[in-house]
Length: 320
Image (cartoon, rainbow, N blue to C red):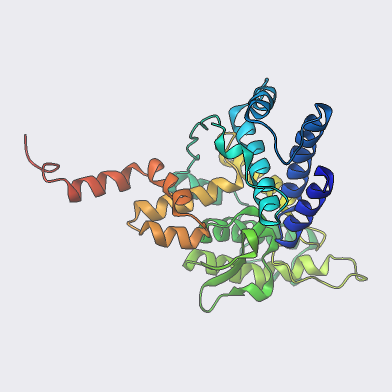
C-alpha cells in the first residue's frame, strides 16, 4: 500500500469517527506534506529511519512555533497508530523521537464581576411595550435579539459549552423543567449540561418572546429548523455568527481583546472549582475524556488552591 492510499484510508477513518471538518483538513495537510517529504527523498513511509525523522523534525520546526510543531506531530502519530492497527506498519516510528516540550498556556478567565458586565452590555428588552408580536417591528426585533443574546451568554456560562455545542443546540435538547441541556460534544459523546435559575429564566423568556419573532422573519419557503439560536433573518446562528455577536458584547462591556466564547467555558470551570466543586464533577460537566485536561483549571483557581492548602496543611493556620 502506498503512503497516499494509507492517508486516504486514515482520513476516511477520521470521518467515520465524526472528527470535525477542520481536524480532517488539518490532518490531511500535515500527513500529505510529511509523505511528500519522504517520497522526495525516496524514504519508505512505513520504515523511516530515526535519522530521517530527526531531519524532518528540524525541517518542521524551522520558523514554526513549538505548539504548531506539537500539533503536527500529534497528527503524524495518529496516522501511524491507525496504520499499525491495520497491520500496514509495525508501530509508530515517532515514538522513539523526543519532541519539543509544549509551553503551558493558562486559559484566560473572567471574574464573576466581568461576567456580569458582559450581561449588562446586552440591550435590555423593552419594558411595558406589550408582547413583541404587537410592538413596532424595529422594537420587537431589538427585544428579540436582546433576549437571544442574554440566553446565549447565560447558557454558555451556566453549562460550560463549547461554541460549536452552543450553535448545535436544538429545541429537543433543552429541558427547562429539569434545568438541563443535552450536549453532543467531541467524538459525538453525549453529556448533560446543567442550567441554573438565571440561564433557565433567560432561555424561557427567549423561547417564549424572542425566538418566535425571529422565526417570523424567516423566508416563508423555508421551514423553521430546530436550532435554538437564530439570527435576525430567522436562520440558525452558526459558530461564526456567535463569535461575532459575543465579540461585540465583549467590546461593549469594555473587556480586553482575547476574551473569546471559550473564555466563558474556562470561567465556568474555574468558578465551579472556586466554589468547592470536585475536579471529577467538573471533568464530567466539561465532557473531558482525561482528568489531566481538566486539571489545568486548578492552575487558574488560586482561591481553590488556598482553601485546600489551609484545610489540609497542619501549620497553615498557626499563628506566628
